[in-house]
Image (cartoon, rainbow, N blue to C red):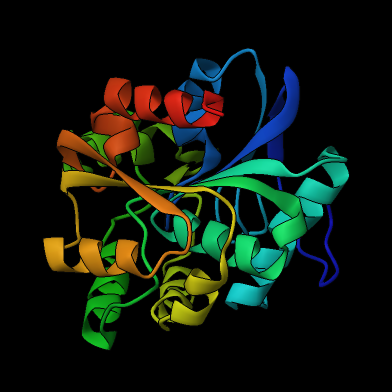
Length: 257
């Protein structure tokens, strides 16, 4: 779909029972990472969104504000569902999902945040992330070469699987500068938005994730209607390396009354 600023937002739909579950990936990821999650939620209808700057959506959008991300998701929901949806996000996608629920409470029935918070991070961290992405020697000549360069961890495997074939080789489906612009926006704390959300919310943390216990407790304390689930032996990308646990807690929350 094409949104107001001319950006193209790509998404895929797994047909099934209403209301839909809408899933948002993290920074430098794509909806492809959540195909197994979508299948695990059958017989529900599931919508997997490539957020702007990612996947098959516009690679270098002019607008990388949080508001732009929020309105993209609201447009997808308005197009695909006549009723409120269950909204799920991981990392940056969790931050987007949180802001959608705050800005458009009429669109969100239940909310799931995997390894997300109110925002944060330092300028040095963001610069280092950009430097890392720019260090990739692209184009990769093969997926085997990309695996050798990026490693064989769950996130690296997802990046390799998602590489875009072009005539001269394989390229990531994101731009390093856009990723830095995007994460810089995510870094602004959004406590007021988080505290305003009335929808039942499940906050899912990994024991090997990026948040301290103090951060987790403070985030839960300030949520109006939030419960917590913890995944063991899992990383920040727990949907990839602790999939069975993730799918189980997600299904349980989305089917509970």
